Amino acid sequence: MEGWKIVEIEWEELEKWAKEARKMAYAPYSKLQVGAALLAGDGQVFVGTNVENASYGLTLCAERVALGSAISKGARTFRAIAITGGPLLITPCGACRQVLAEFGLGLRIRCFDENGQKRDFVLEDLLPAAFLGNFLDRSSF
Ligand code: THU
Image 1 (cartoon, rainbow, N blue to C red):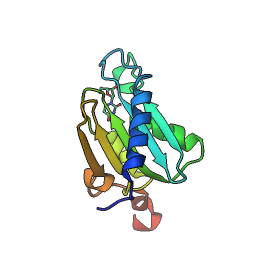
Image 2: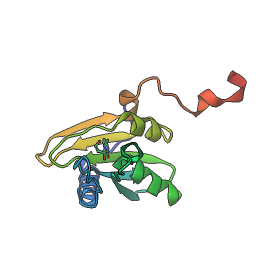
Image 3: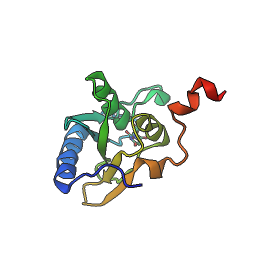
């Protein structure tokens, strides 16, 4: 899938915000600090970091924190998200893929690390045959 068109200068800006956000990560258990920067349709950027918890399963991923922040400000359209695990190039977990899919499968995703490695995706390719709101259309069950 093609997804939204993102020019390199936009990716650079998003990478900068994701790196900055990562510095605020609360990750005392895994020690994996993650930063994410989400670009809304109107050009606003919303950041997130992972927020761990002593009850491990309650941990929030950086991507979902960024999305929650954006939604809280009224944003509903998203073009791209940049994600960094610092020394680690990580890809978004399954739960984050599902939560991001709610707002469009055309979302462009850049995963990058601090050594200059990058991998670009479109959400639809990371979550094929997604379960979306249209399945809940009452006429279909
Ligand atoms: N984590 C994220 O923040 N985003 C991902 O895409 C993968 C995992 C966090 C959750 C947890 O705090 C730590 O990384 C280890 O799983």
